[in-house]
Image (cartoon, rainbow, N blue to C red):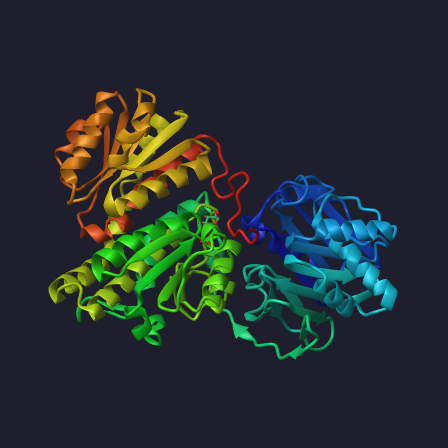
Length: 612
Ligand code: G6P
């Protein structure tokens, strides 16, 4: 949700900023802009994607070895050229890029207007830079001190970087609840919302913590202090990312690449944690708190979007296998509904980015109430990963397509391993069933590869239904959350209205929508309740709905009733979501491509939602 990038050093800043913005475009693409210092300040900003900024700035001067850049997901003010970042102070001395929301901006703006400040945009960001200017002017303060004082007056979330055209030898950055990473090169520094713009320049990074301000000098060492003016020693991390992970690798879209990576990413998630020959699963993250976890009163799983769907599968896994009561909550609801959470609870946050503002806030609440908090996160070093008491990374590698695919299967793999560890320790499943599930989980990557071979069939079905305005997704048990996820994927990237339902609930409402125009995708791989699903399909066919069924290889009953069937290899029922979701990801991908949609950057969405 808004991407920030900044550079100071000996090189030309513009190409570094532009490439960085392209890497961060998944965070928002309503507008893009840069500010460069070269004598004075040169600002180029444009509504739309980074490509439009590049075209606009083609003929203009790009000189300067210090600069800041921004790609925006609009919150305050329409996505147009004026509201695009960077914004400047009234005296045009300071320029700022900002990710987050200044909640008390209206009050601050009114006070500044009284002092004679005039605003050009509708953004909260412009108010912040005017506030910093006012403080700097009054006390004749260095920029970092003016920023620090201004931030004590601000309510909300921010990651900011500023430049001052009277001092081209430093960048000033600060964060609260929005991420910021500082890359340390040879005689140069980089700042960005995540490590992806930095990785090709240096592997040494410092993650800024909440309420910290960094003074990033052209010459000399990085200096960090807190908003309370306490000096901090920067902790340098070594990045473990490869540049190929950030490229499309011959695929038309990142989403397609990420769908096809899943046999590898699931295997990576299990690497060193599961041994099929010896029949065990271990998760290092669980060990320190294992007694507290196996004796928990209940688990509360919190997440948003696709991660919430993975959480629902977690509920089936933990209850079915480990017999631990589970509640799954939208993080945004959990935090605002005065929930009952005690020290006997374990709150599990699921998040691909590790930066989702609602999930982070729900964790803060859970921590306050004394619960143990556990993170299931993809992005290494992200805010949620650092905030939790314990946790496990899913190791899916960078996910760039806005619609989540490989992170979902990584989350489900991790939850499955966690449920197996807990079930084994609690003695809630027999040793032979445990061994069987461990062995079968190890077979999943090969089976995923097999499912991917259905791509041509799925593409054909996509062509048949691409122009239908609605779609219904049905599933039962472990595959009910997969139905929700399939519907979400279709909505997100093809803009077709889709609903996911537990198959048996169809008769309580959605059945009224079924006619010969309604495609109904049924996940019918369950061994339990198989006959019931068959009846549900009959009910759809009786109303002339078009049935697309995902079935287990060799199924002869459903293939006779359904209009189209997609086969997946047989597996243990708790593991079916890892296979059944893949044709649904492919279906939405092909439909979106056929409808001319930008699959990786769907309208109005952002990958990392760092505002409430
Ligand atoms: C956004 C993304 C979704 C994602 C959700 C939660 O809405 O577009 O793909 O599932 O945020 O994100 P998280 O990073 O916490 O998993």
